[in-house]
Image (cartoon, rainbow, N blue to C red; front, side, top):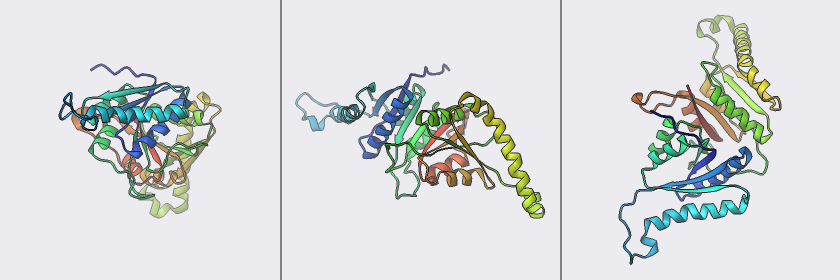
Length: 288
């Protein structure tokens, strides 16, 4: 199977909701920072073709075009120099979003939060897209949109296996915002020794984890010398660590290991914790 050719665009999925428009504004800012184009994608299935004498309000094509065109008009007013592409796809939403993600630098989706600290409102389409997308997927927390001054960005690192995709995304995100990158790693002390080792065991675990984290970050510090990195070792589970680190942040970035299609969509405990409990928007970055 050939890999899709990645275009120099940020794609946002639009469904006509206020949340998707908020995501579009965030995506426009991100595209501008990264010097990319912005693609507005809306997918729909035409259930009943309009007849020549049908009123415009009954034409599904009309409303689909309005969703994209109205968003384009609003975004162009705020970003006059940004290249904006409209895309209407006559297909199932999850199919259209996965295809759009495969051809983009990232895919941005809106979400509906139940309250300020509640989980993302994600249906089967959103979960399927996150678990299958070939590129990073950013889920905007409800009520969190574009800001005049970019805020805190956090990356959660497991230190197991290659994570170049996640680290590159995280460093570029911090670099284009001109903000520090907060790198967090969670690790529990070994249970067999924690009961007897006490503080010494916790200290040894933290020191070992910090050495490993420094080793992983060293080549990226050299590649992005202007990005200040604030690293943190938390003696708790990786899932708990990323959720706690996300507090008072604008964006949490976590990795998702790619799985063969035969295994079906899978999301690990860290990604699930981030999606359901982090209080900020979340970027899920696939890696080998």
